[in-house]
Image (cartoon, rainbow, N blue to C red; front, side, top):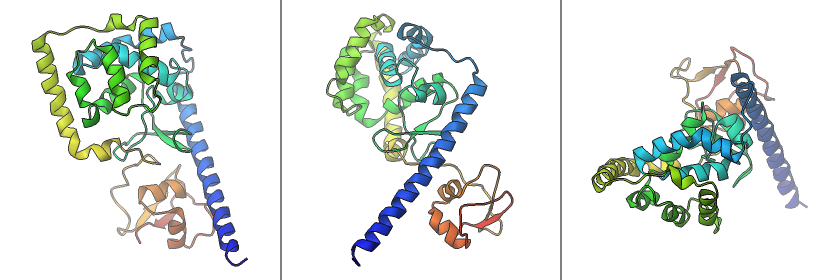
Length: 281
């Protein structure tokens, strides 16, 4: 009995904390969704053909910059976003399922994926998502793909799977089938040998610059990090602002909610605007 009791208490505490986080994430998502509806009160309901028509231009633009076949980018967008109709695409403008990392400074949208309440990036518009998709691929693990011709969609599809982009063994077939079903290869363009050399030089310079900070840039984090306020009162005290929660403040200053409550002798999670909280142990 003496052994099982602390385990039960710990289990209850973990369930409680998980429930609190889920509620916080739900409130966060509702605000993101509210902002999205306000920004775009009449959102487009895409089918696959209209999705392709809407995003082929940015896919071609990114292809000409970096050499990623437009057909591959469009097929991934269709597959990952449900042709732009997933909640992540509709409310977060995230068409490729790119998650928050420690260098992400934007808003976050939380949904179950590899883990419960995984943190996903929120973009101002879908074009940002397409551009970030290119940046996501400019890393060492995908570097060999940029040596392919920019209209070699079949080897790009296979290479993405081999480099670990997706765990589904049928991922290359899914992309290739979409490309061929919707003739997405028509948006791919050949390049001369000179154009390819210049493009590779530019892309590999960027990939090599990323290598020292790849772990920071591409490792997912549980919560979107924010820059903490530049000044604390007395170097120790944070002044509560509108919209703050203990969880949000704890994330800013890399401490737990329990530590924050203990530092300030708080018995519950209620805080008010203007309240000073000790955040430096």
